[in-house]
Length: 224
Image (cartoon, rainbow, N blue to C red; front, side, top):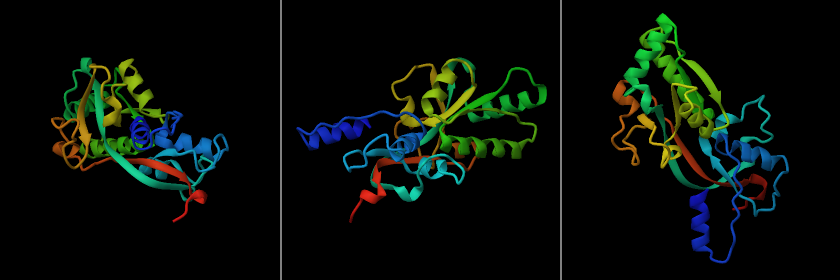
């Protein structure tokens, strides 16, 4: 959002862009607000969108107040990879360490081994990772902590010590606390922001997650 604001201010000087931040679910909450009439559908109010999250958030029984057909993404300007992060005090250095901790928790119990997912896309990533670990050893156990409101809560939960690890997007942790340590990127190639962080496939997990972000309008307002 800040990138788009800076771009519009440079390209169209004199035109004021007023960003309204609605954190959570990579645009789904913003779209729900727009579809509920909170903001005018006059063509002057744009809504940020994450293509994958929007598609997965809209379920047949979900009270999203909009459908995929209502969303017209006329510009896709960026993408980002998901990343698994831990607190630097955790002692966890890799996905292998996560597997070992989860296995120990499943066998011996004790302190809960938990994971927070920053958004609905991250939930599916968690689901895939957990089941890939279960395929290796069915005794693995991870307590999932739901944070569908977005990455901010997942990061806060990690820093507060409420979860062992979190899944968020790479831009979410740029410039944040040095206590956050990325240990694995969900991409098929090295991430440009974290080129030295291993990929999931380096550990034998064929799992990727990339979010495509852009700007959208209600479909009824769009013309060729």
